Amino acid sequence: MTESAANRSLFWIGIISLLILSAGPVQAQFAIDKDALNYSGLHGSAKQVEETSIGNQEALSFSNGAATNSIDISESSEGSTMLPPAQGEVGWIIGVPANGYGVILHTTDGGENWTRQGSPNTIPNVPLSDVRAIDANTAWAVGNEDGNYAVILRTTDGGKTWIRCGAPGSVPDFGPLGIGAVDSKIAWVVGSNGTIIHTEDGGKTWGQQASNTRAALMKVAAIDRYNAWIVGDHDNGYAVILRTSDGGLTWTRQGNASTVKTTGLIDVTAADNSSALAVGVNHTVLKTMDVGASWQTRMDGIASGIAHMNGACAINKSNVWITQDYGRVYWTSDGGKTWNGQNPNGTGFWLMSASARSLKTVWVVGISPWIGKGIILHTTNRGVNWTEQFAPVNVPFRRVSFVGTRS
Image 1 (tube, rainbow, N blue to C red):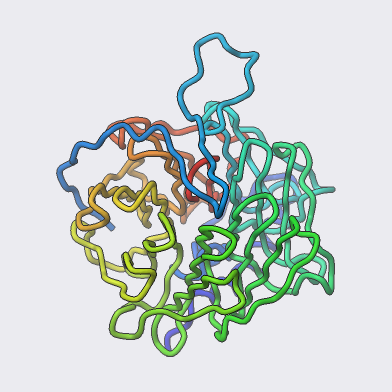
Image 2: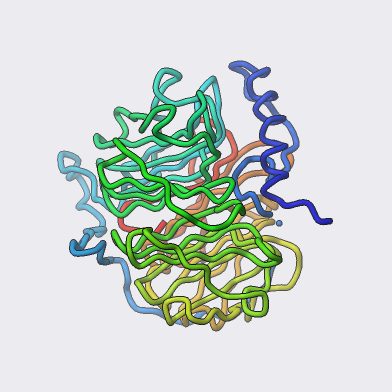
């Protein structure tokens, strides 16, 4: 019997937590099994296709239910330091703990400078698994359980203060792996044992929703207060894809063993209520354009192998970035019919997440499988050149989220 990567995750996270705690203030240097980080629950290569030209997509606007977030992400004028940061330059990154509390990094200048937020008094000493930036002031983050209930964090002041949501009894004791937030009030959190919880009041109260599966649920793509997708580990031999159109009152499983030909999906991104793209185990890429009535593989240009696709970020129906094990990233401008591959750092990092505001501009984070460090990469020219950004603490990074992106 093949062991579920989600189960491997739960086993190894305990080992890594002990190593981190025993290291005290000194950063531990050790070989890491990516699946051990409670990060993908599922986990692990390459190719090159000629680039196609695209229009300028630096201005991004998309709907969250009835409201529309129109994000000004143009470069601010030189010398205008007294102005507030452009929304599109504000982002957060999360990772494993260091010095006694989970790592949350923040930037207001596109990553030229990253600062660590929180303290041991406000951020539990657990690995954080997902983050969602809503606007320059508001973001959500989730991590492993602590104190007999799941860690769910929220800021409404740009990260000056992070408040833990809920309490024992009001939030289940489970391991959150993903959060999908519509705005500062409405969010879903998913994780181990098929758990889905939902809030509509900014995390003051949470209701549990029925998934009808015990599979680990990995990530959420929330479109608006009614529509969302969830992906996860396998159940009855193929990966779980769930869809709601009524705010989670009902979740319907999509696909079957002949169409969802993978044992695990790790991330999902959605351009609108009709189209979504999911990635996962063994370089899997799946796409739907009909609200999930059908799912097709979209892997032309992606080399076969056992490397896992870990992160996906749609700009719109046509343009998407995805990340892979062993230092690979891909982009498409034709809805995934063909993919263009790059190896931006050449060092074999597992690239875990992308946050893209256009095909030109994207941030990618990842982890080293061997020395327990993280990496932050950035491009403004569709990957022709990549810049490594400096982090104030060097730990494995799991997710990145910039304001105005679908990640």
